[in-house]
Length: 74
Image (tube, rainbow, N blue to C red; front, side):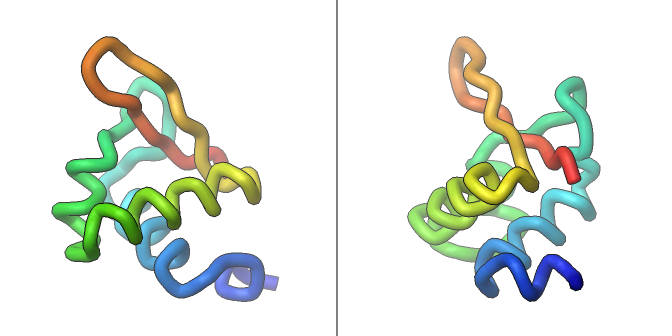
C-alpha cells in the first residue's frame, strides 16, 4: 500500500517535492512558499495538500517567527 492509495494527487505531488528538496527532519524544514515554487502549483492547492499530509500523519508543521516550516515524518 503506497502513498498514492492514501493521499490525493496534489498531496502526492507535494510529498514528492518535499522529499526531493530534502525536507525530511525538523532541522531541514521548508516554508510553504518554497514548496509552492518547487511543485509549480497554486498556493491554495499547496496549502490544502500540506493540510492533508498533516492530517494523515505524513508531515508536521512547526510555527516559527516569520513563516511556518514543514517537514516529512514518514
